[in-house]
Length: 212
Image (cartoon, rainbow, N blue to C red; front, side, top):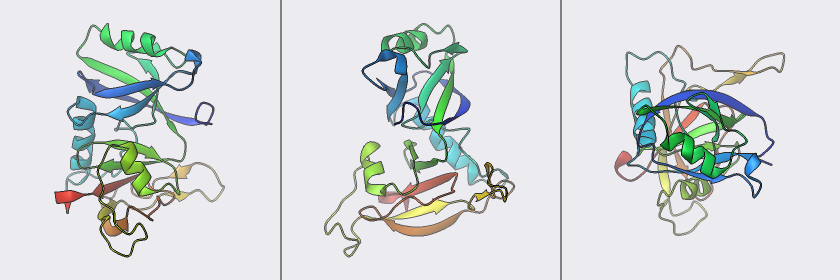
């Protein structure tokens, strides 16, 4: 149940307009509000795109993006320091609309153990291990062409960029990022129809269309 699953908290500064589509998590407004859509024209998407552009810079030694991106499925916990984790859609929108600055500080809660899957236009979604790439693309309104749906025709093939894999501590504790301090970026092909998100990656960048 996404209403009660543990979440990791991040604070991210985004200028208006955000370009986010919000929705109450349940018919009970006290469950709070979650991000269900990101517009490519909004500043959240533009900020996300800049994050992934920067990690490919030779001058950047930090390959993590979890604490820098806004994702579909993130829960809004506070806006400019005002808690809203248990507020209705209307109250959350009011907090954004009535902000006295052009830059909004969003505190978000992301499902623990998830991976940021992103596309070239800055659309990001928080994905669980084992989720299908085609399903995630549809959630982000990214058009993928299909034919056989079995991986044989290669119509839905894309290039996947990914960092060094995260590894679990020997004591079974929190996951460490094995990519920190290294900007190594790897590539392989995936098929949206049958491909699934692997475990223990901070991010995965799907290149579609003219992206490869």
